[in-house]
Amino acid sequence: MKTLLTGLLILVLLCGCAVGRQFDVNKAERIKPGMTRAEVVALIGHNPGSTGISCNNADCYEMMTWFYAVAYGKTKALSVRIKNGVVE
Image 1 (cartoon, rainbow, N blue to C red):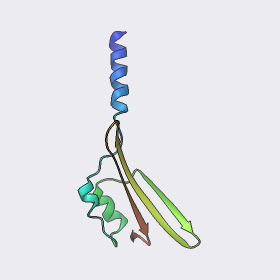
Image 2: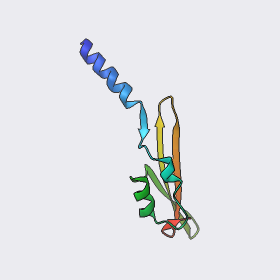
Image 3: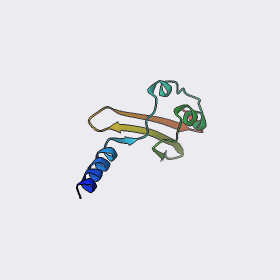
Image 4: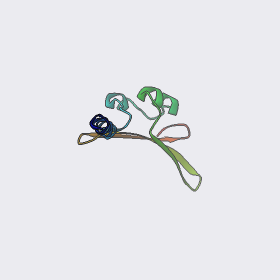
């Protein structure tokens, strides 16, 4: 029983340590207007944690967001706006 409780405690602690996928801020700073969605994803190294499409009349764009948080530590977020297939 003691082993089971210890195992559960370790599992809970490990699961609560981080949310999202790590990304390199130096790579994020290399994102430039005119880059395609595929170029941005290739540069960051993985797909965003969330995406959304927003439209105002006929003006639509996609927002890609990467998020990484460590419990009791730093939080990083990166949002990239894509319009007509390229970074604005």
